[in-house]
Length: 114
Length: 118
Image (cartoon, rainbow over all chains, first blue to last red; front, top):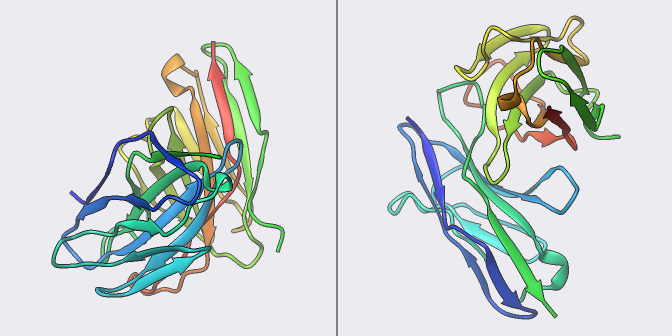
C-alpha cells in the first residue's frame, strides 16, 4: 500500500543553519504531498503542499519540490530560527484511493538552539 | 473562521469505561476525518465522513469504536469498553471537497483530544 518514509530525528541545529528533512513516498497513483508541522502543545498545521510532479510548495521560508522520478518531497529551509523547533510530518493523499485520507510519516523532531 | 475545535482536550478514564469525543469542523467544510496518533508516530486514519455519510473506516476502527456525524456538521467518536491500548491523541480534521475523488483538498486539523486509559 501507499506509504511515507521520513528521516528519523531528532535533528538538532544551530540558529541560521540550513535544514533538510528527507521524505520519500510509495504510491500507486498520483498523490498530493504535504508537510505538516506540530508545535509543542498544539495541533497539526499545514506548512506547504504540492499536487503534481515538479510543483514546489513554499511557506514561511520552507520549500519542498515534488520529485516524481525520485519519489521524494524533501523539506528545506535556508536559515532556521529557534521558533522553527517542532515536529514535522510528511504526508500524502492517495490519488483515486481513499477519498483523500492522509497517510503520514512518523515525524521528525527539530530542535533549533540559539 | 474559527478553525476545527475538539472537546475535551484531555480525558482520563478507567479501563472498561466508555468515552465520547466531539469535533466541530470549520463551518463550510463538508468532509470530516478522525485520526489517532500515538507517541512518536504520525497520525493514522480512522474514519471519514462526507456530509453525514460515513464513507470509509480503517481496519484500526474496531467494533468498540463508533463515529457519527448526524447533521453533517459536528461529529462524535465513541469508544466503548476502553482498553489501555486506546491511550492516544485523537485528531479531527475537516476539508472542503467536491464529489470527484481527485479534487485537491487540504485538511485542517483540530488540537486533538488526549486520552489516557488507566
